[in-house]
Image (cartoon, rainbow, N blue to C red; front, side, top):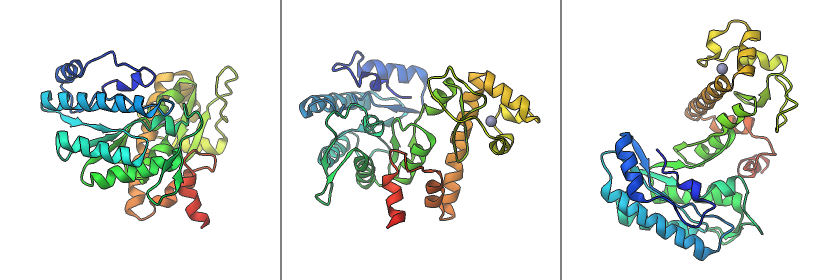
Length: 294
Ligand SMILES: [Zn+2]
C-alpha cells in the first residue's frame, strides 16, 4: 500500500501525518507499506526540495519505529547523484539494510513535466547528464548502495517503460497506464502499441484501429475476459463496449509482458525483447538504442 504522498507533489505542505498513515496500514493488515514521502519537484529550488526530503526522513523514522508486522518500504529521493547517495546513507542510518527500497521523484523526469529550463546534473564520469540519463544513473546508484534489497520504482507509465525499468535493475514498478488507456477506449497487445477496436472520433487520444492481422493476436488472448469468447467479433464487441473489460484485459497483458520479458532474460535474449518493442520516439529510447548503432 502506498501512502498517497505523491498527491502532494504540487503542494508545499502535506495534509496528513505519518502516524495517521501508520494507523491506516495497521487496520488494513497490509503486506508492504510505503513511507509517507514528499516527492521532490524539479521546478522547485534545491532548498525547497531539501525541506521535502527532511520531511520524508522524519516520517520514515516515525513510521519505522511504530510499524507493525508488515514489510516497510523507505523511499529515496534526490536530483543529483550526491544527494541520492546521501539519502541512501540517511535511510541506512534509520532502518539499517532495508529489505525493500523505493526510488521516488522520477515521475516528472519520466514524463518530462515541470522541467522548466531543463534538468542538468553531473554524471559520475564528470560529464553533464539530462533527465533521461539521470533515471538510469539513479537506478544504478541505488542498486549499488543496496545490492540485496528489493528495489521498486514508482509511477513508470506504460508497458515499455516498465520493461526498461526492469532492464535498468528495478525488481518491481507500479503503473496506472493500463487503466488510463482502458479509460479512453484503447486495448494493449503484446509487442504492439495501443489500439482502438473501432474508430473513436470523440476520444481525446488518437490510436490506430486494430488491423485484421492484429486480430489474430487478440484472438489468442487468455485474459479472464477474452477467454470466454470463441468468436473474435463478440470478443471485440465486449472489449469495445466495457471499460472494466478493457482494464482487466490491459492489466493482464501488462503482467504477461513482464513474465515474457523475464523468460527471455533467462534465455539471454532480454535485450532483444526490449529493442523489438522500443520505438525511436520512446522517451527513454536513447538509453538503449544507441548501443546497437555503436
Ligand atoms: Zn484479453
